[in-house]
Length: 530
Image (cartoon, rainbow, N blue to C red; front, side):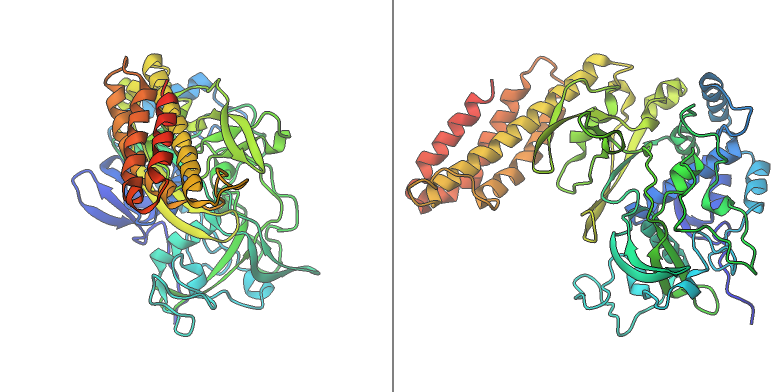
């Protein structure tokens, strides 16, 4: 019987949506060959789509020559002109260059020496497999209860190979920190992994009219700051000798991060090895463990970063975390402004510290794109709401309207107005939280020194008021953009008053002092509107 194989460059494993509305599954190779006919990726798992888009951008940089490698590196101006020339080509990527690139490397998910994005040494370095349920996000594993899935560890069901690839990508980019399968390297055994490079982050990608435009718009700009070391994606590394254990040493210092290959595809902290069914159509088990204990510091070009000037250089940039309860419009100004000179206050650690906001690096070159593309450019957002360690809450995606008309480079007044409205909405929202907590405490706490203290847990009034406020604030936000002279703070304060009154209306008949406390809270909100 032939060995199982699954060539990801040819097998239908990446769902895409064509411009004519047809949805189809393609391999990596065909995705690039047809990129000019494809509207967008159609992966149903947002973190897998976020990871796949990074791989595709790296591949696109290679086949288009925008990777700016070698001694003959392009200047920033030459690189921008090269990209504009490519965007004028209605036929997309050069088929010869695409086939030449994919023919050069191994893309087989189950190759004995170089399984795609996996380490075959885990079969001997790990004594225990993780199980297919550990591989697939959303399935219960171990002693965990099956809340949203019918799967159990007593009867683990195989997963189709295309879906196994999606979950493999999620592990590499969003994988958990903490206990994992013990891996023995030399005389050292370790069963603890570090968090993936994108864990708990919100990813922003320029979205063109076709996938071809999306990939070219997303290629990171060249920079002299990147080291001159040879830039390789994991599948571009030299093939290890089958008679020697000479693969990458997970205990050694990793190669320096370079762009775009290592930056977009080479910072995983996890190692995996999929166990296929005999026909290669399904995955029945997997090894999942640590790949590197060494951190690979780099600024991902699709993340908003909070810059803390008072922190050490290596800890100064912190990605904006994903929060499923935070609406996308609250991040718009961070994308539109070239630089935020105003300190923002955010909870970090035990107290409140100031930071400035740095927009994703991929957005700094949008001004170099052709005018028709700039006018149509939107932003695709992928979020995975997680904690720093092991808890996965939810993932989500969103899409902005065309953003170029509001960019600071195009319309500074519009960008500043968006920032003004967002700041006003958040300040009023914070004050709504404060006054609703205080009112709840006044009504429910006994008299004495505890009266008026903010409660430790979120009171029901605050939760309800917050739930009512933010959808109204979003509608107000968009309305304010059409009326640039209207006062933003008073508009959002009116929304907060409405939300507080609606949230506390039943309490007036239930609690003796509720009406007085709510009236005081409403008065404070109105005073805060000026």
